[in-house]
Amino acid sequence: MNNLLKQDLDEIHDLMNSTLREGLNYLDQINELPTSVKVEGSQSVNLDELGMGGKKALSEFNQRFKSLMVASTGPRYWGFVTGGATPAALMGDVLATIYDQNTQTDKGHGDVSALIEFETIQLLLDLFDLPKDYLGGFVTGATMSNFSCLAVGRQWLGKQKGIDIAKEGISGQLKVLAATPHSSAIKSLAMLGMGSANLIKVGTLGGTREAIDMEDLKHKIDDLNGEPFILITSGGTVNTVDFDDFEAIAQLRKKHNFWWHIDAAFGGFAVLSPAHDFLLKGWEHADSLTIDGHKWLNVPYESAFFFIKEKHKLSQVEAFQNSNAPYLGDPLDNFNYLNFLPENSRRFKALAAWFTLKAYGKEGHKEIITRNIKQTQQLGSFVENSKHFELLAPVRLNTVCFTLRGESDAARVNKFLNELNDTGKVFMTPTVFNGRSGIRAALVNWRTTDEDVLLVWQLMQQTFEGI
Ligand SMILES: *Cc1c(COP(=O)(O)O)cnc(C)c1O
Figure 1 (cartoon, rainbow, N blue to C red):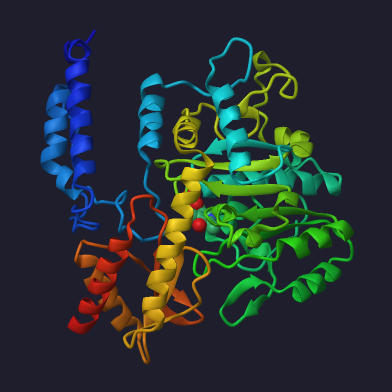
Figure 2: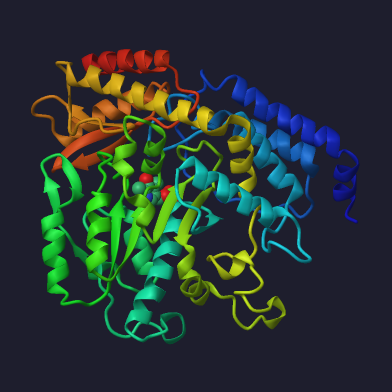
């Protein structure tokens, strides 16, 4: 064994303890650490012939990078839709790294990790009040979850037309309809060879609504003359967190033959708020659902899951079968995750989710969701009643989409946003809505307190006065 490896093996307790101590120091300071830093571009580096051992690697990391780690897991990182990690989720994630299982099969000569993943999927279905007739699995993010769901939808759609697309490829055009799909769903269409430009855009309700216009959807469906298609719907759009009308779509499905996908990456958690669960009414009829773990479930990156109705198991296997590996047996008899999703070897991603669900239960996670919603409403009403800012859309859930009041050009909005972010106390991201430059603050972190909202509101006003 290499000398340095041997030395690190002998000192693994010390090495891991000092690593953990560094990580915990970061968490101890999370409220004060900057939410953004200035970094230089990358420089060219060379790999040393001889290594330095774990201890020196940690010193070099600390010296060069530690101060550049932003508080993205902290209470005021409101850019994109960035969740944190609950204490129990961290416990699970650290153990997933240490145990390093390759999560594959549910029985036979494997390990127990796939069983724990199954169990976690059951817990999640309970969390979301969804029926148990979904087969679920963990992937790296909602992008890959959308991809997985749409891959099975594509296989299903091919079958309606008598083609096995996984085998034969795409011959002829497949019809996909959507109103306000997330960019990752369009990216998935590109990755699936379905062509992102082939998406048939359905109209929205207009104004500040991004939800699908059901009348236009009916027209677009009539235009297809009975041809089967895929419908991608939104359970929470990114800009204004608007929801498509799932009850109406469930009704439509009784009359038309289509694959119904819901991207509920973060909006799915609305089901935990009694005042908002109506937004998801009817979603249990969808063929496939995408939900992110690393957003509002507050588990570390990379974690998302899909739910695909079990009745589509055959299409799912056809889409993802790891063929030419006869030693793996019949994929329908011998369950193995590698035949049901894109990756073959897989990290034990379910464990962080399992820990946080076990540790805090439905109540604990409900408290995070309802608290974040209340805080978003608070910030939204500050914005609405201010002379400096205005809302670009009403606050529907956990996101405030706003801009500077009056004639605010993109340059001025960006100047404000950059200066606000440069305070290092809060982080928000830019957007464009209805042709206007704006800013989004998305609150999905379990650490966020009401005081954080007040602090940010003060900073926003000070920053405004400075520009
Ligand atoms: C974040 C998000 C995605 C993409 O998820 P990743 O986890 O970044 O891959 C897809 N859809 C919606 C609605 C999202 O908010």
